[in-house]
Every structure is written in structure tokens, then in C-alpha cells.
Length: 93
Image (cartoon, rainbow, N blue to C red):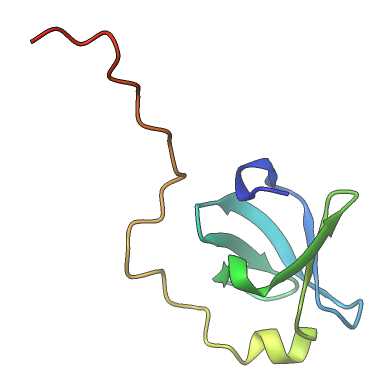
């Protein structure tokens, strides 16, 4: 599944089955997640997504491990969804 196919409101679970949070929005390389039961947001890197099934995002870490990753800080680079460049076939010089 591509990152662009993930939707706000989907649950995020650790690989131990415990709820980690909820998808708020999706970038190219990160999911902005609200934490279950806590204030604030986390920026979950796409590299830690193990599987997506039935509107649930499963991490490749336990809930506790994910909470200790330090994902409170936003990504350093722009994380806008990736777009395809328009073709240049009809350009006139």
C-alpha cells in the first residue's frame, strides 16, 4: 500500500496489538499521528510501518518501543505528498 492511500482516522497499532494512536494526516515519508490517551502528535516514519489491513496501520515495533522513539519532533525536510512531474511533450520553444 502506498502512503497516499492511508486515510485520517485509521487506527495505528503496535506489533503487540496495543493501540498506539490514530492517523491525522499522511505525508510522503511520515504519518502524523495523535497518541492514544495522550496529548500531542507523533511523526511516525514510513519505515516503521509493517502492514496496513482493514483501515489499521500496524507498526513493526511494540507500542512501548514506538513511544520511546522520540517521534515528537516534525521531520526536518518538507514532507509533502509526492507528485508526478508533468510531461514536457507538448512544450514549444
